[in-house]
Each structure stands twice: as C-alpha cells, then as structure tokens.
Amino acid sequence: MIIYSRYLIRKGYTAFAFWPLIFIKERAKCTPILLRHERIHLRQQLELLVIPFYILYFLEYLIRRFQYATWREAYMNISFEREAFAHEKDEDYLRRRRLWAWTRYVRKKTRTD
Figure (cartoon, rainbow, N blue to C red):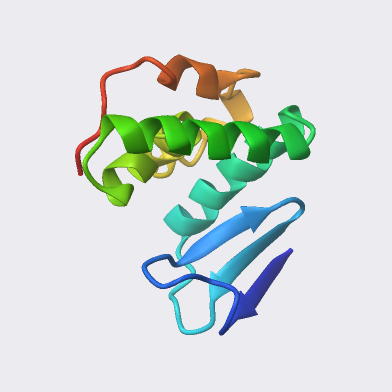
C-alpha cells in the first residue's frame, strides 16, 4: 500500500518503506523505479522479520558514518540501499531475487555517488 505524506518524509528523501507500507513525499513523482526500490526494501524487511531489519540498518549506518565523510556516502553504502539501487531499474529482479541477497553487498566495492 502506498501512502502520500507531506510531513513523514525527511528533507532530501523522496520515499521510504516501512513494512507493509511505502510512504512517498506528497508532491513527488511515483515512478516505477522508485516503487521497485522501495519494494526491494519491503522484501528485505520481510525476510528479516521487520524489526531486525531496522536494527541492522541503523547499526550499518553507524559503521558507515565512521568510514565515510558524509551522511550521504554512509547512506549510499548501506548494504540494503546498495542492493536496492543496483536493481531498481530491473523489472524482473524481485521475481528472481534470492533470499538474503542484500548480504552480497556488505563487503562489496563501495558506492560514491
């Protein structure tokens, strides 16, 4: 289910997934790429039984903040985000995605964009 919100989305972001919902900034364009990105996060959340996903996401963000100069670089290098960004343009990815696919991105070469 998609919910459009004026207040829940932080500045600098367009959307976020919070099982089982996708929240999108009120005036943002809801593109297929954006939806696929957030649906990848929903799948990650489901396979980790939701709460552990958020714990791991937060812990990895803290680790990445020590590794990178900016919050944006830290965010872009979280394994969950790396998987989502890597496959958001692939229409068939969620059909063939393997369980725990995000783990392949924990030590993979870093993103800088």
